[in-house]
Length: 362
Image 1 (cartoon, rainbow, N blue to C red):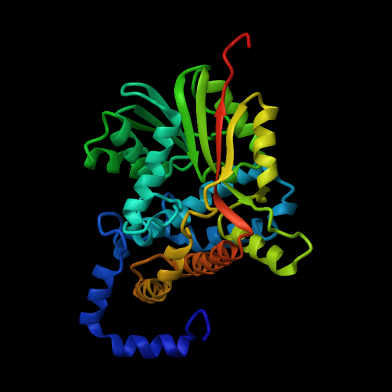
Image 2: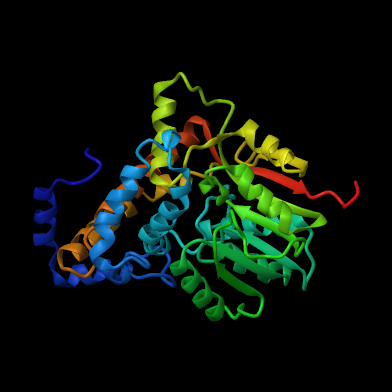
């Protein structure tokens, strides 16, 4: 069975769909009903007319992630990526743009919350302390962590559309007194030295052209003696660079997630040490006894087909911008690469580092 239906099949489906079924699909299409609706899908801060051309430029730039020469342009294209995908992520996945281990007896939403609350337990932050979310997206983790810890959480994201979405969600959740979001590049953060009691990043620093640069910035703004917890995307000990299938799978993940080359599990801890951190914990949370994090992707394949049908129809009717179909198709293919990476064990999106900034003078 082909991954995507042919146009002949598409038009046949359109003819059979009917107006009533169309509205059912539009209203029921969202996995996260409190987030975006299908009819609201757009291109973030990109105008409707620029969505398709922006996608084409993005796809070309990340065609060979490890061979990107213009590293300085990576943040701009990561910004473009999140303009293109944020609405789709919220609509089809939720407000937390990350994975989590499946927990028996728990829903996807509950498993996600537990994965986020683990950060608080590792940091040991107390009510009223200041915590930094490095690459906060639309703030799903931020709100869970603020509610659980009662700490003040400041998030930074390079994408101004995500800033607006996060602030709106914070207010609706009644957490705007504990959560704030700023627009900025985490490679050059607009914060004073030694200003946070804790910091974390959840599957975000993988977008950095050089991991050392973002770790150095976190080190700068963190108070001496305090902790930084990060979940990193890495290739695992099972990855073989001489295995064509492994390479193709990792390349698919990089291309579809705006990554300028995945790091190996060995590199991340060493890079942290280079900038001055003490590594307290360095392990893969995806390993057994953890349950597979990619189960949600496999279970969602039918929803992906359904959602693609909805998006194609909305684009044809002029409700969704041209190019959104291309973006959704890219994400579908990327989900397949991620699933293969998880099943083969060559990729993990949750390699844990617990890092400490040494006390001054030590």
